[in-house]
Image (spheres, helix red, strand yellow):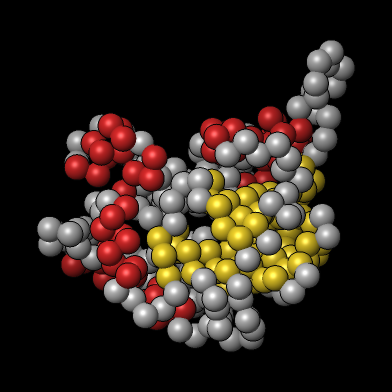
Length: 284
């Protein structure tokens, strides 16, 4: 199978508007791998897009993606959903226009995401009502997209949550198995995943910048670690799975690291991990 990282950034993209740090300055001056847009992956065999950050229009164009038959949402957070207006571009009628909507895109999402985006949002609810065929997924659901089998894998962001509100998606075709779990992997169940050829997952948070500056205060870090994992924990999670290759995404601008610094970090790990970059194409 083939997948492309449309965006490798997180809630804080790179460059961050108004920020004059060395990482953002380099991204503005040189572009390329220094730029990180919102977290999104395109699986070519399924013609499916996992998550729709704000710049979904731009990243699809940049990677020359000509078909999107399905969108899969991992959770409701704005940095993963506020690009849903791309559904209009995907389903818009060509000229001469009689009806604006030529086709509705299949959109898969967890129940909590449906509640927040469809039931409780007049704007996104209207958008999805007009331009999407919405499917609510439960943990363990299996469905097909363009002859690719997809399994929805859900878990609770917090142990006290009543239902599984964070999802990853396991794509399988002709024996190749690719798992995309873009964010909030702390409580993700890893037992029973079987052998994976490729795993695209969140990198986890860094506590300090390369210069040693704290990224979060001690109090803020303690609070965030109730639901989020550190980079070390993310790499440790990899050891729980039989996987050939792991590509890390959800790479925040706040970590203040350059591509070469991430490369150096990955090279020191015994696990098969690398840090992804925008536009990176991966094949099994």
